[in-house]
Image (cartoon, rainbow, N blue to C red; front, side):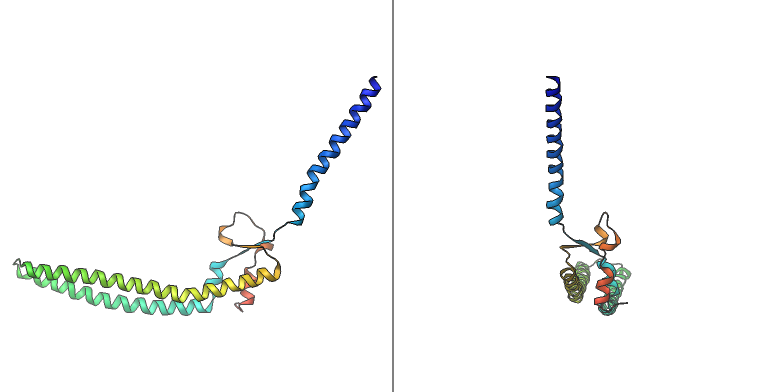
Length: 174
């Protein structure tokens, strides 16, 4: 009987080993069929290297300089009005009300100029972003990538998954 038990133990062990082997090898087979190709791209670097970005920066800088000059003139006029009022040494409720209104107008003008600059920046940046995104999409479709992430948010990745140079080449940026 002891030989029978030993034989039965061996058969059970063999069965368990085969079952475990099949169990652990099956997910690898399924996983191998569903492997997703994931890439990364340095979006910020590409954006900075685009000729359109340089032109947009120049346009925005010109607008900022103009806005700053206009605000400086308004600020100087307001400061002169305040100094002139202070030199009189007399309190005048109407004049103080007028100065507060000038200050509010100055602040309102500054906010309007800031909003205008922000809208202009969005207007100039949107087409550049769209161009880069379309190029990334084209490369990812052509090369079979299922997902592309910004390189700056990845935790780990090898250099083979970086498609930044492919995007730069397709955009003719050196």
